[in-house]
Image (cartoon, rainbow, N blue to C red; front, side, top):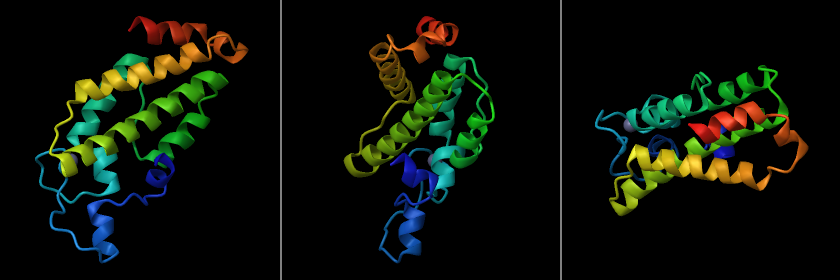
Amino acid sequence: MVWLAIQGRLLTQERKLRLHIQVDDTECCLCEEKVMETTRHLFEECKWSKMVWQEIVQWTGIYLINNGIKQFLDGIKEKHWKQFKMETIAAISGAVLYYTWRARNWKKYKGKNVNTKDAVIQIKKEITERIQFLSNSKKVQRCRGFIQHLFCN
Ligand SMILES: [Zn+2]
């Protein structure tokens, strides 16, 4: 799913229109801005994903600019972070995309509102579990400071 998002190939309402798939509602369902649901809007401009992103920035203590998924991942590579820190940041951004897309689907097809706070809790849980699972590996131990920060915030 993250890969499709990077390539802009998720079946957003805008893309359905372009593919001549019938859509009855083209507006983003996660905010009230009444704008066309595009990949760019959902993951970069939408209030919902912006709020999640802000909390994630606070959590990691790293100022991450969400200027498009592909640019973001390319930006990570240039930071010269230790391997595990880089992997973790990539995993976090993947989780943000995943939970944004899931919240959109829940709202659209089940009528359920997903609170941004709940999504953030899920993302933190997923990421910290991943770190715990890998905690004995050398690459994790090399990033102790960063990991301590994640667990203490
Ligand atoms: Zn929106």
